[in-house]
Image (tube, rainbow, N blue to C red; front, side, top):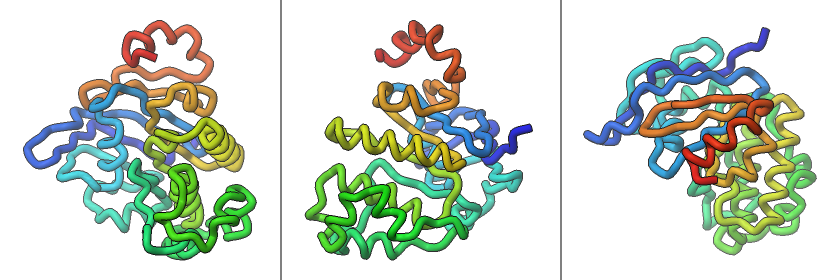
Length: 234
């Protein structure tokens, strides 16, 4: 039987008085890639943030390898093996690319070495001494993903990593996600770019109004396309 890495049950979340998550339920098995789909404002990014306790307040249950985390501080949740790549990337612009890569904490013993990172992202090797502000948008996104991989996290929360990037960079990131899946990483992706997400995920969860309203597998995707057009306009 598959081992559950993440289990989210009846998760509610607030920013101040704004109630944004209304009982989110889903699970992610170890080694599985799951994509959260939905229109802007559906609650996808808030779900990732709530998993890590980066939301105003939350209630419900979030278990990581069976450990309840809703009472834990964000840094303690991360140390259970979770890496988060936010939509805004969050790199340190005054530091070089390589200095950014040397900063992450150690969450596990499976973090990638600099040589492994540079083999995966040759652009970063070429720009190792360049300040974050001098990197292109695509290079910044590669750096944000690479930094998470340096930590040794085995559950990756990736928020819109393909957004606004040139097709050649999106293709490269798709190859990286596919490779990570082959290496047994567990991944939850928020993606607006359905063409990018479609071939990568094992399962798709459709969110609307702060809850999961549909879920289906890769094998069920062809028969669900009509409904996806309706929900997402894809």
